[in-house]
Image (cartoon, rainbow, N blue to C red; front, side, top):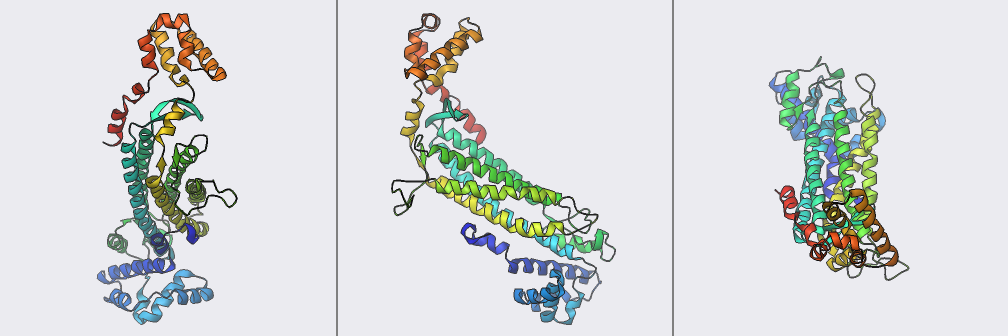
Length: 430
């Protein structure tokens, strides 16, 4: 991933240095287990841990010759650790190291992504409570529907990210497995107790059955969850972009003192952060399909999944981490315009209260279809003639004979739309 959309913590996890460090951890843990089981001489793991050094440049030099990354890694370690290192990798296959290490990198990344989500949840909770009773228009199909509050909108995002956190926790658990089962996964040349020991040492679970590789449905689930989280990011970003439009202007991204919005038009304040998040979300979601396609491999193993994971492993996690942090900052610093929200509520001159008018007519004895037709006619006239709906209603003898003036006035108030906000908030923030 390019540095523009990367944070150091995630970049470090997916660095060559960290990858080879994890490989060494796996090999040393396996050697430690074999030493305890008297499969190899005792003390090999201590010598390798003490003398083994990660030299990325040297590993690449060897790999250029042997065309095999794990062999290159083991050769490089042996050069530093000495002849005792020949006992490393006894009975193991490359995938034992690669898959277990890849899962560790996913777990490391996932733990940071969980922290990112926690920050978003904290900001959304704070903002939702601040704007709990700030009225704004609810829209369906982009059209004014009925009043809601801005806090309710934010509470909806909060609940979604709560679900995302649960999904990610499950996905991390899904990939927290270790396979040290040897060629085609039969443990023919390695004691199953080695896998159990390594799993415990590295805080993983033994893979119940590995066909030489850890089954890729686990990874497909993990990357699918990242894609869902990316979708949630875009949902929030799209809302911000819409609400910042000049015709709406209920929200605005923070715009710093020296920031420029356009090279041509000095007046511009563009929603560049939320637009950027929309684009980054597309990248993360685009990695879901190849992760799903990795599930079906030939027989007990092929490497068609390998090139995919070398790309989507770092790119998905690094990009999502960056996007989550950016979203958190965007939400924390956004500028809210309650007066414009109120202005937009009144923009359609009361037609947003059409449902309750219709319901009151049905309560008075009119058939629903007839009541609907009457109110729809007045609503259309309100739109086309730019007249307040209340004025048109008061000229309709049938309606005023069915609904009292006091009840009519109550219908055209926002307050009743807020009566269950506390109820909803208790369910969300319990």
